[in-house]
Length: 236
Image (cartoon, rainbow, N blue to C red; front, top):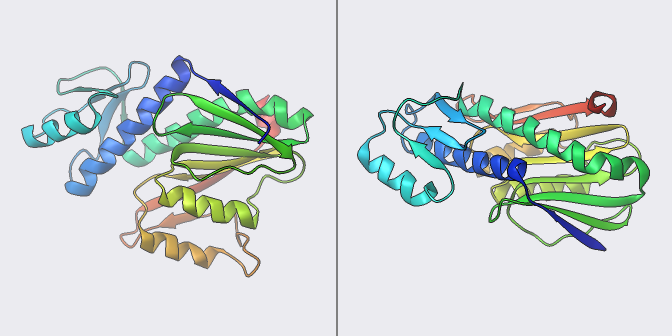
């Protein structure tokens, strides 16, 4: 690891808070599956609207999340989401931030870079590695991207092993950016160990994804993991 850059602004703060809103809704739905299948979130102001929430549940979410996001029990302005659509929204918000920060580096530099949005602070960390290689310690983060300075953007076998660890540690969005394209895998609902085991069906004997474009569903048929690839031309 050669050097590290820390970025903190209103954009990183809004994204960080929104991930905690997603965790909160996931918590509620795991406890009460029929609760808050739709919810209102004001992304600009970081306000989550939970009308008609039971008092014991409100006490819990305020204790766990109240220091990070504002929770309103009254009708408020914002967009209506399901958890799946909200996580897709966060995936593309993250991708927009990544392309602003990393595209100039990946198009003009043979060093690998990583971008991290950690759990514990509302800032983005950009780390420069060696030429065509980067090594990082294990950590918990919402977002992790790294670059492939030349060539395709699909996961290598090492990337895939890192991704499984990333998801098991509570990660949401993991991606690769090259000078040609970007590829992301992102969580849209809680992923169990059974789901992770099922992922083995998508891996060939060399450790690569058989088909990078897939959607993983849990035993109930609910989508838990999705993939997306975009050409660099779409960044312009």
